[in-house]
Length: 439
Ligand code: PLP
Image (tube, rainbow, N blue to C red):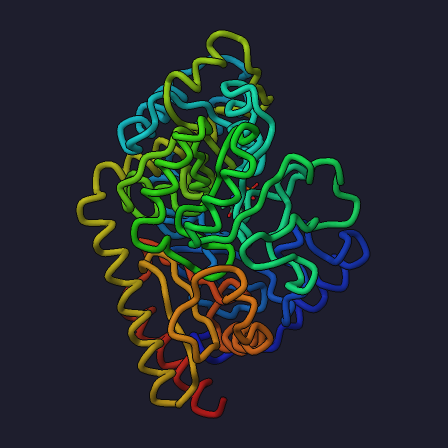
C-alpha cells in the first residue's frame, strides 16, 4: 500500500538494499550524481510525476531521471512503443525506418537541425560535436564557460564547480580538473570564460582567436543554478564566434525539447551551428543526438570526420524517441505553455512560502526547469555568484524535502513534466512552507 506524500514508513528495505549495494558498487551507486543521498531511498516503480520506494513511500518527483521524463514516468505512448519494438528486435546494427522518423522529428522541431546523427548519451555526443568543429576549422581549442557541464569525459570535465580559490580570477578563470585520474593534457585544449560577461568573453576569444574551433555553452545554464543568458549575451556571442571563424555549439542536453519544441535555440531565438541533445529526446531511454548545419554534418557524409557507435539509433531507443517527440510535436502548442504555467505556479508558491517564513530564498528559471537558491542576493549570474550561495543549507533543505516525500536534484534544481498537476504543486508548496516555518 502506498503512503501519502508527507508521511512515510521507515526505510527498512531501502537500508537493506543500501548495505548490499555498498558491498558490490563503489559508493553503493552507479553514477556519482547519485552518491551521498541522505536517505536509502530505493525506487520500486515510477509513474507520472511520482516515485514509489521499496518501502511503499510516495514522492512527488522533480528529478525526473535528471531531466529526461518530460512526459512523466512511464508515459503510456512511450511504454506502448517500447514494448511493441522490444519484441521485434533490440539492436539491429542495420538501417530501419524508426531512425529516419526520429531524425525527421528533430529536423522539424529544432531550428538549426539540418542534419542529425544519433548517439547513446550526452557525454559522447558533446565529444562528437567538438570533433566536427575541429574537422571544419582545422583548429584545436574549445572555449567553454565556468560552471557549465558537458559530460563526465576527460576532454570536457573542466571547471564545473571548482574551489573558487584555485580557479583563478573571475574574468579569466583557469581550467580545473573535475576528477583525479583525468587526462591532464586535455586542459591544453580548453579555454575558459565566465558566463554572462561579454567583455570577459570578448577578451578571451580575442586572445585565442586563431585557435578556437568551437564556443560551447549550456544556453540556459542548468548545472550551476538555473541561469538565463543576460539580455543580448547569446546574440553577441553568436556574432563574435562567427567573426572569429569558430563554431557555436549549444549543449541542449537539458534544454532540448524541454524549454520549447525547438529547445533553447527556439526559446531564445539564437541558432547555433551545432547542438547536442540527450535526456528528454527519448523520454527515458538512452538516446542522444548531434544536430546542426548541413555543411558541418556533411563532413560525416564525406567520410572526413568519423562518427560511430554500436547502439546508435538502436530501434528500442528510436521507438521511444518517435513516441516522445511525436507527442511533443503534436501537442506542443498546449503542452509547453501548460508545463511553463505549472512550473511558474510552483515557483511563485515557493517564493511566497519563503517570504512568509522570512527565509532568504531566490527562485529563478523559466518554469519547465528552475532553481531554488538560499541567498539574499537579488540575482545569480554566474558560477562565482552560485558558489557564494548557501549550498550547505540547500543540501539540508533537499534532505528535509526527501524525508517528506518531495524529490529534487540535491543542489536545488527542479524539473517539471507534463504529468505534474496543480495538486502535486500545491502539496509541494505546503510541505516546503512547513519546513521553512521552523528553518
Ligand atoms: N550536457 C549537459 C548540459 C548535461 O546536463 C549532461 C548530463 O547531465 C550531459 C551533457 C551529459 O549527458 P550524459 O549524462 O547523458 O552523458
